[in-house]
Image 1 (cartoon, helix red, strand yellow):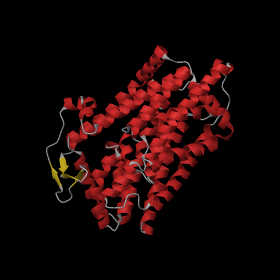
Image 2 (cartoon, one colour):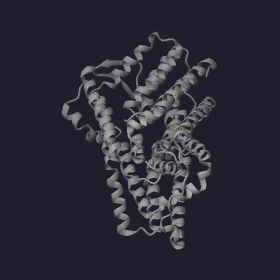
Image 3 (cartoon, one colour):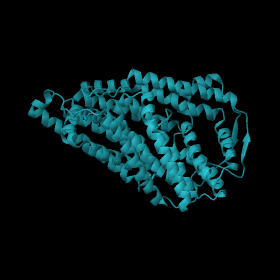
Image 4 (cartoon, one colour):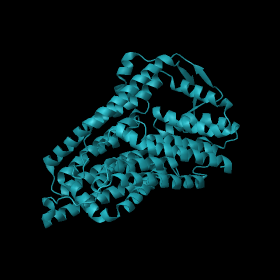
Length: 470
């Protein structure tokens, strides 16, 4: 993508076809596994809050598994009515709002105006801006557990990166990759660390000092990786040719009003998310809040610039239509978990994985827990859902090896967070790549270099935790 290329909210044909092919292959592999792996099930009980957790006393038993071919074929639709279907529908609506709003911002000229002002202000200090943006997104992920909620900002950061002389990969790295890294560091992440610590019988957000050290180390690695890549592909920062709206004082004033409106309303939405870190009643509604605030901000600001009525409605509809291919990708990716759950083989995979731990030394045991969560996150992107599934299993077993529950929680957070920005089964990643016009294959080649370095770093942090008795 060249610096002059218009940033669009529509999903490009290349990125769509590549991602669709990858996901279809994974769907086919998941169906093949239903013939190779027998069905099995752990007995589950409900805690005081009604959450289903594994009953360790009852153990595991084999059951009849498998899934009919028609059900696998229809799984991208059937998943909407399965467990977690409500969240999936919310994600889809969230995505459609993003597509409609960004098309309105582009057609009104507000996106161009915002980029022009940003490049003029930060062009000379672009690497300082990179450091600030990475820190901001990592903090949002680590302190308040924002990940999907960061998606609306991805196209803006990508467009800014392109106009600052970099490419879309840098923009995705500064936004959703940074948010995923912060989510994994989990300083006060309520959805992974908070839930896992409660299930493990630990005070909520205890042991924060080690997670703060991890946050700093991961931030330094990510920033160094992005700077190194950006230095290799950077172009001189150039002001794009001004369009007609900049030559008219009245239109310029309208753009300033629209920009102020957009930033103010979106800022209020971010403030509400920040409040959710201590107002737990908001935590289940953060995605809805951001979607509503983003919709209001986009419609009002576009109207202030002169895009109103039928013209605004057509722009919004065009944006929604352009984003529809991403909905298909999300449904197909979500159907993989549905297939494995319907065939009752997820618990079987988990049972045999836990059986491998019997002869491991404690140093390998903590790394095995990390890798186990990494593997399970491919099928179950939800951090809290995995916590209810895995923590009752891994904490008691780890304690037999002399590994603390606190270190288990850290390994769990690492395994859940980093792979969110690597696996094609994560809806937020698919949305972000589509909005950035980046194919999954390009993203995989780019991000895997960071993921390998990060795996070594975080594995070392876990081993350090064993040494210091964390």
